[in-house]
Image (cartoon, rainbow, N blue to C red; front, side, top):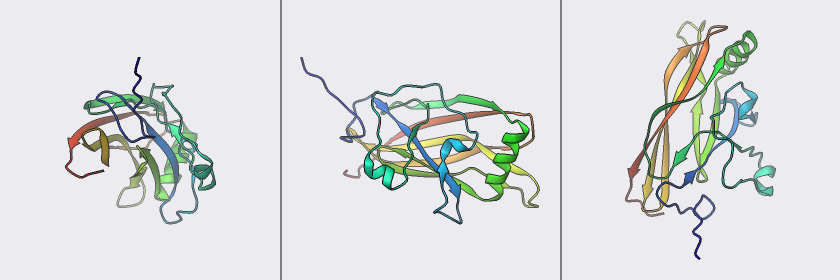
Length: 182
C-alpha cells in the first residue's frame, strides 16, 4: 500500500489536492513594523474549518508570522468561479474598525505554498470622506507540472462602508500553466 502526500511542505501537488490559503498579518502600509493578526479586523472566514496539516514553526513565531487558515477552499489546478465564502453585518463597531484601517492604508499579507501575497483592505474616496472595502479576491495561480510557481491577487468589488449593511465576501481562482522552473 503506497500513500502519496502532497502539500506545501514538499511543494508538490496532485491535481485536486488541497492548497491552503493562510492569512497572516494586517497593518498600516506606512509603518510595516506595526502588524496585527489578520482577523483582528472583523473579516469573516470561509466555511472550511479543517485542513490536512498545520504550518507554524518556531522560526515563524520569532518573525511574527501569525498564520491562520482562511477557510477558503482551493484545490490544485481546479479553477473556481466567483464564489461567495462569507458575509458579515457591518455593525457600528465593525464600521469604525474598517474605516480606521482604510484611512490608515492597512494592507494584509497571505501565503499560498510559502509564497507571500499582499492586498489592500480598501480605499478612501477622492474627497477623503467615504471608505470603500474590497470584497472580492481574484487569485491567478501559476503552476509548472506539480508545483505552484507564482500567485497574483486582484482585489475587486469595491463597496462603500455604511453602518448596518451586509458585506458579502467572495473569491475566484484561475490556474495558469507556467514554464518557469521551480
